[in-house]
Image (tube, rainbow, N blue to C red; front, top):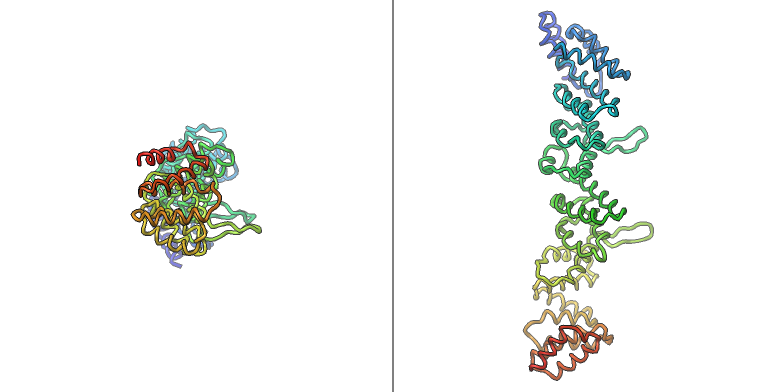
Length: 468
């Protein structure tokens, strides 16, 4: 009702200024009248008043109306010629800018294949210099055309144009998915823009970009992440491995810091699957940069597909990182991986392997007291497993007798010599340090018999034995 009252006030002002022969001011009021949004309904009396006022205010009304009809009927060149003539005679007022904008849009859309890139950029410039309503359907359609045009004309810098167009002019319809007549989803304009930035490796300040879009940061970032996901997926499918690893690297650099989300987890899932065998080493740094703190509740849940049940993504990720770490010897802070193991153990208390792996991480992190506490528990639950006693012995630094006892216990539990070489070697080291040379020689001979006669550790220990 307020809009309707305002409209009638503007109609009265238009009539007053027409009577006073002040057509410029009448035009200003008429433009405001046309801009009123009646929230989905039309007042026929007000529309009739607008039709009566328009020709009285606008001396070019008949020409503009003719140009509009020509344009809507596909006679784009004739419509454009009318506006060029108005411009040449300095008769194009702001009242006509919306009409001229539509003529430009219909012309470049119809004649795109016949226009050079310079021609199209010139029309974009002419449009941007207009003072039509923004945001508006026309303004959004110009942006949509520019987006599609940029995909086949790489000399056109879409991002630069987008900033000039001004992202604050995105409408609700541009920010949310729509549907066509068949009920199929139509991706939002903003999601397609983000996808194009990813596909063209457009360099831009993402924080500045996010600040200009009237959506949550997580929503917009996921538009980018989804595009990266499909690029990674297709690179692997097409065996473009150099591109694949570069995409993972760029993702870590650009998007890992923006928190958890569905697509952030989906990309971790691809990394866990694709970084295997000779490329498994890549996963450790990727997962660390991806940041396990961003694991969602859903990532800790098993998934089912058909009749199959799959382990949680989070569990697969931390175990894969653990496997890579086992072969690394240099010191590093592993707190970032120990934390998600704490979560995993709380969620899956019956998984003894999780507990064991966490103990090994503490051991590798030189947190011996933490490791000892865990192995005390494991020694009760898995007392018949030789590897528990072997690993437990690694936590013992100052008590050689205890260490010898644990290693001896490990040897007594396992009969397959293929698994005992390292235990014989570790035991020999302790025995030599305690000057129990005859016992050490027995262990060295046992180690030698495990077909590791060329092993440097064996030769070094043998020299130590001989010195004693």
